[in-house]
Image (cartoon, rainbow, N blue to C red; front, top):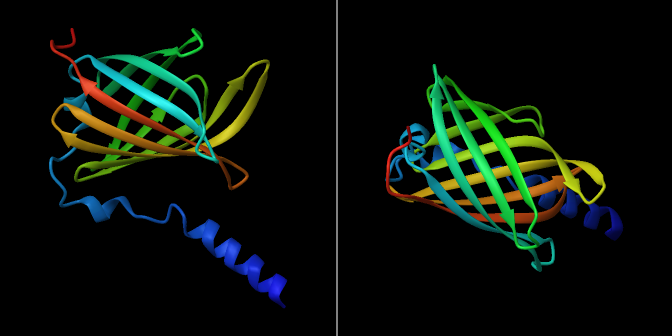
Length: 179
């Protein structure tokens, strides 16, 4: 009986994580406008932490953007602390008021995003390359606009419902407009 209760509590705890609705931030200021935020070059700094909290990777990202019709293209160029590099190009498409879809080469299917107030929640599956192996993982990203030039992102990375670690990023808009 005690074992059953412990399992139920564990399942309840795991399923309650991530049940926050982005709509709860609708009144928060400043309002996040993805197109406006990425209308300038953006620099980001981040870390990847294991579930234990140990930082195992640091990185910087240079992000440029352009418009193609109603789509927003984000070109992300990563430089990791071990000297390795990566590039990811996102194609973001508005799908309704406060709703976005996103695609990138390593994203499985479509990323789904919802904006309300100063917050954006992205959910997607990603083919994560680690050394010579590729793992299918799920990301739950929460982004918060702090001021017109600063965005904070906290992501939970999981596989089969088990959290593997977190990614934390700080985005800062740079001087100058995008072409």
